[in-house]
Image (cartoon, rainbow, N blue to C red; front, top):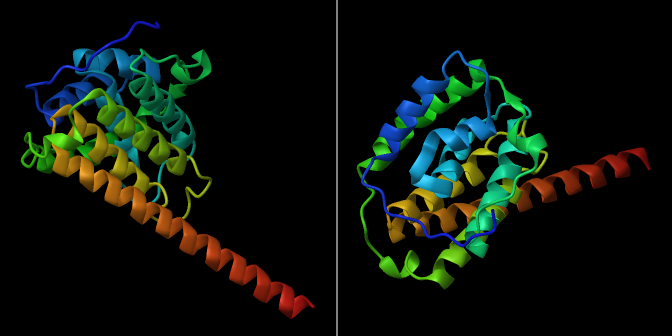
Length: 213
């Protein structure tokens, strides 16, 4: 599990692979290990992209952000270190509710289908070279940390980092630097959004203390 690896470009569309995955897990009991095995040769970046899809709705599915967020962080760190990932058995083998997961993936499929039309190799400086891929891997890990913030009931708190992960992952898969750049933009938007939420919570607390004092 500690061997170095290199990503291969794929000629298959992300939406096509995702459709096969959805058809394969529909009505089945599924774990993250099953999802990783199902995506096959398209690799770890595709796992990150698929794991981001349930969060492309304003309010995420309870409990999923912890499992998928942790998996995204560990996988992206493996990408950064150019190593195959180690994931705890508790995360790999936790049962996921496909009755909720499949509809979320199908919503994401519509977005991915539209995204497929725009993916093409460009701005290669943002997707080529070991150092660049390591930086991009760290960016995915940072978005994964933001995804795990305990704000699941706050609208868009999971959606914004989820979009960042999707853009970074698919951009790296298809060597599309413009899409990767979009991922960085959404990380910045997420940080600003969380800072505003934190400031509002602080101001509300100060106001409440003033009323009580």
